Image 1 (cartoon, rainbow, N blue to C red):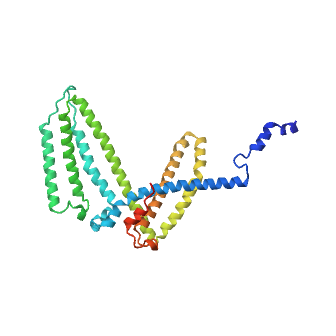
Image 2 (tube, rainbow, N blue to C red):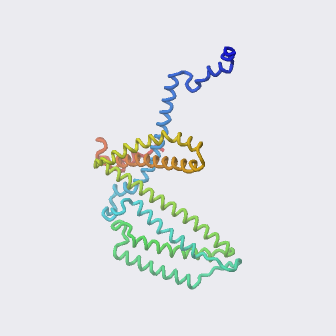
Image 3 (cartoon, helix red, strand yellow):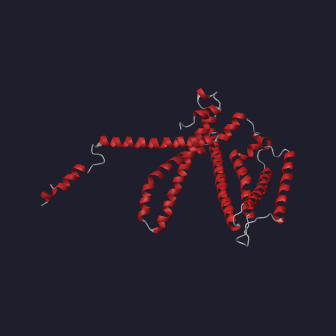
Length: 321
């Protein structure tokens, strides 16, 4: 019985095809290794080009100032990066107007009411804000505060932008409502929806600009610490690299544990893996940004590029897209 079973066609097929992953033995193992290595290099090369493209955008304000020297470096130093000033200016120039416009679009008790007229309260409010904004802008301009080249973006300047935005948002909304002849309730709903959608985009862009500033400042700070020979930072890089390797090795086992564990573990373990993956991606992005900052701005990089200006270095680092 055993002899007949050992000679069955099923076992024979299993013997012939049991090593379907590496039928050629060590030769196929080598092919699998080089295939994996090639795929790994391709993935990281694409990621590198994406990070360089992002990095060229991140360092653009610094590169512009480094090449032209149009701004007073001492006045802009408290901002650390121009992206944060741009984020604040963008938000204060648009968000208050969108919010004020939403408040200006008020409902009417009569659903069929179509004519929208400017009440004396709304007119007085707009005139007071407009007069205050004009007086504030004139005073700031006279005192030289509204000079971003010499004084950067100041908080009074940001406040003047916000007040001007409120006036423009109020007036634009009232003009829109007065010119539209559809039922009042419908046009108010349309205006409010459009203002809300635009406010969402403004806040997303503001956060994006602030994030670009964070990448710019953090990568520049890391580069400065490396150049000063900070020992704890070098040790942190080594520990971080080991942590990334451990995390990469534990991803699949943790996913398997999450699939076989209780409901509570299934809830927090994938979230933990996702957070760890995001942290690893941020570390890789910062690595390439620091390398790009060093290549573009560091005076001592390569002997052949010592006299090459920063803008030419940045042009040579542009991805081939």
